[in-house]
Length: 420
Image 1 (cartoon, rainbow, N blue to C red):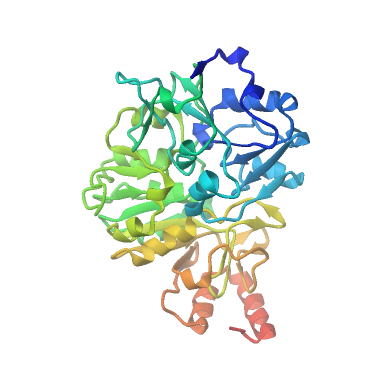
Image 2 (cartoon, one colour):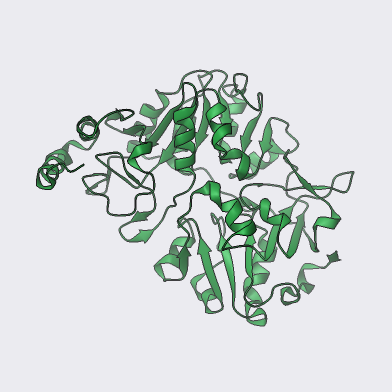
């Protein structure tokens, strides 16, 4: 293992032309390493990077002179890459990412990871994420670690020792943060309808953004909620601190809030530091269909860009720009549908500006099929499509569309002849 000062790190010694480089996403990004990688790209030659959710501005379109960027998601800074034609999209379910990166077409040759200092046994936890990249740590040719003394020690399923690391760089800098998003009035009304579906003892899964956070903020009066999600954020922490989340009725991981990564602020990081209530696990566990189906009353709360009248969901493309992802929505919605008392929920405002988000025909890809349709929620109410034929689905989806758009949607159905 090489131990190198940050300003002396020459990544061209470890990254080869043609390699695929991947790093942990969001707050877990090892920014000293990723910044150095972009700065030194000319000495390496052409290589490929797999990107997750960005929480920094490390990567820019001008870096594409020598770097090919691939990502499963178009959020944050990835949008600029896509607009510039510099992002190659991998439209894959989240549950498949570990295999893709560990032993698939986008196999990671070099993995960059941000770790907390070693414990008394010389072992490092994985810090702020286990997630989809954990599996690639076992198959990558090179693992380079930024050991950052400001990264919290989080309870997880695996640790790394000196033998697992090829290069170590010691740093001291605050991890990237993702602050909570403030909901607008419409989002708050949608959230209120979703919150009304959540009963005491439910296990919660939630996605990224203002809407899921707003839902969590309305659940402080519930009791014995659990968390099993792809991420844990500040809003989830608030529920734990309020006593609403205890995990006491969870089927699995009772008393633990389970997620793949922490995605929030320093307050969350301090809360989770050596806190046995918070447990990070890899995607093979968090998105496992058997694990999800076994959870008690799993309520999956996911957003969408648009939904058609049959229950097909586009969560990827908005006005020609890739802003979302296939993500884990399908995994969690199917899991919630099979969970005893579970609820597969897709929530969204009825409009985006002057346009309806309830549509007769999707303008983008089908990210989640209508066969997985569950409950759809807008500020106008809840449409339960489970087990319903198309005629009933259309009627219920029209009822939660914006009233100003309902005549046009009905007219579009007539023009289409209400096809199957």
